[in-house]
Image 1 (tube, protein in one colour):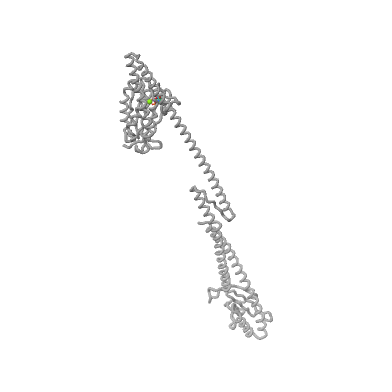
Image 2 (cartoon, protein in one colour):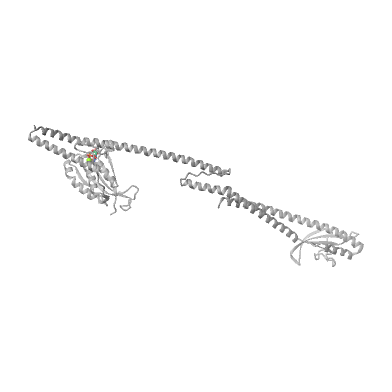
Length: 487
Ligand SMILES: Nc1ncnc2c1ncn2[C@@H]1O[C@H](COP(=O)(O)OP(=O)(O)O)[C@@H](O)[C@H]1O
Ligand SMILES: [Mg+2]
């Protein structure tokens, strides 16, 4: 319910309760006063009449005295005046109302119901009449309907009730208007403002002409909005500055990479070029024997071949084609590569094996690119091993981070391809740089430092990731993760 309505209801109910109690007390008081008044009236009329009747009885006889009573009865509309003999017998000229009740020698008041009007009650007063010798002649009886009193009280009560209702209605209206104006309207504005703040709109300060707790609350809300807006602006500025800083760092990082790339290219191509230039110079002098010349030419051809390999890998790195992802069986890729690296493995006396793991090994990826990645990883593993070492390829699907092991392969699962070797492993410094282009720990002519950076680029472009765990002297494991495909 609205606050203003609640206020009105509380005011109306409170006022009503007070006025009802007050009216009830007043009605009781009025009834008492009315009774007292009636008795006093009866006493006054009764004693005056009793004296007159006694005098008339003595002077002019009983009949005249009764005449006097009858006259008194006719003059009064609200009361009935009569005369009763000491035995309680009614006087036939001026009869009282109470049948057969003997007269006592003193003033008497009682309430009785008339048998002819059972719903009415009467107040009856009897004043004894004495003769000149003090003997009891009878009693003047005055009888009045109590209904008059009740009517009077009722009409009084109705008047009071009407006035009360009018008063309560009017004060209710006043409280309603004031409540709506002073409480309901400002609270509505405050609620709307709070809603706007919740939606992030901090504009539109509240201003009330009234000076009370609500206006104080409104100015607190305004101040809060200002502070929030300031904090927002500060956060915005800080975020922008942070983004700028990150952008600058990225730029610097790119420059470093480009520098390393250039240095790497210079180094990698410089060495074979030096060899070629040296041998060609000697051949041009013409002083070389035919046999040695043939050796020189073979060296030139070998270095040119080496340069071609480097340039091809560079092209792979720089101008990779767009991946064409398709459902690919990783087990098949593993078999193809194991066969392909067989001669290198034999040369290094290293055993390459495919570990059989149950379940599907279907991944979404470009099969040609995945073959390239796996061959880079396996050849690295072979190079890391001493003779008699082992390189193991495993593949399958597993629950992805946050997934459930009972989910179907495509939901919450990922495909993996792992290459584990028991070779020399890597220290932390090496591990931190292996994905950089041209980073190699191998001798000149042995490694180009491009294999892992190419592998990394391919896997990322295929929507996967690559990671390594390794310790010096403890072997290494390279893990490639790709989206799984339901089978
Ligand atoms: N299985 C492995 N065990 C130990 N070191 C590794 C392994 N694979 C890669 N590396 C390290 O990472 C470097 C970079 O590898 P890569 O990018 O393939 O270039 P390259 O093989 O031509 O050196 C290697 O020189 C070697 O130091
Ligand atoms: Mg390599």
